[in-house]
Length: 448
Image (cartoon, rainbow, N blue to C red):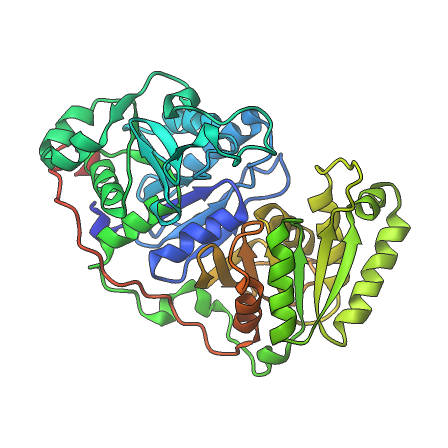
């Protein structure tokens, strides 16, 4: 089966990453949220190998052992082997990268290609060294708030010695030469500076039956190669499972902003000049205290509910400069939002940070999202299908926007507000066809 007639399975370590990758595929994609129960390993990705599916494994901040277990379980799910598979990771190499690579090596019958470049944000790999704007990753500030140090080379994250595909060979060797050279490899690290480089990497992966571990750009490269395949009729799109009702443009919008980045202030100032919104600030010290004071949390949620009845509302976590354990804050903020929305009635949600968004949806019992379109790079508009909530869940959440942390320019929140305020019917987000790379010969039994 070739890329032209197969679907893709995207396994992401957080929700915003799953959405960011899924929306590049050019059709509406179902995002499955893995169970929040660590003892529940069930995962139904569907048997139709021509359909695209994304899964949020929610494992960015769990232990390496737990991340490896969740990844192995997903790779053992029925329907996985019939799809081209990409394990979507952070392009800055944060999270449980080594655990994902180990799980991929355990489950893949072919090579594993490690290609984390994200050219759209100038995050590249040259000679195996990860770069940001041409500067070595370990010499930037990208890892300043992370535990440990940034890797100096891709091999630092590899559970076993890898082969390496450098730019010269990638760009000058004939496809058959590359396939012959790397077909028997177990693990391959790949350079890339451009989307054309990544399309070559993905085409190589398809020809040798490899699994790809990479950024959302690897998924975009897959979509570029497959772009000649006709888009399925909109009637078969998962996003059509829920019919938009009149008046969705008038529904209240709740923003959950769990990022104290400086740029958030500029984004809020811009939003308030363009729309009628209230901002409800919660200091991190107050939120942290909710862990031992359920009554205070419930009281805060009631205040949020009351204010949401009169205006669109931004709930923001603020930094007072006092020392606070930040680890429980996303969960506590999510609990505030979930209590505020439970039984409230139809509403839209925008959440910055994949961890915060996922925690809210877990508490509301939402088990799936259907992508609609990309609002701006990283910000994705999705819809909650009526069949996605678990039995007994009480939520009338309609549309959801996910966005990584403080990403986007000053107009980001304004653009998100506009997207949620529109009541236009769902339409698949089409991408312009891209020139395919040179085709590879496919002679292995697995690819026949």
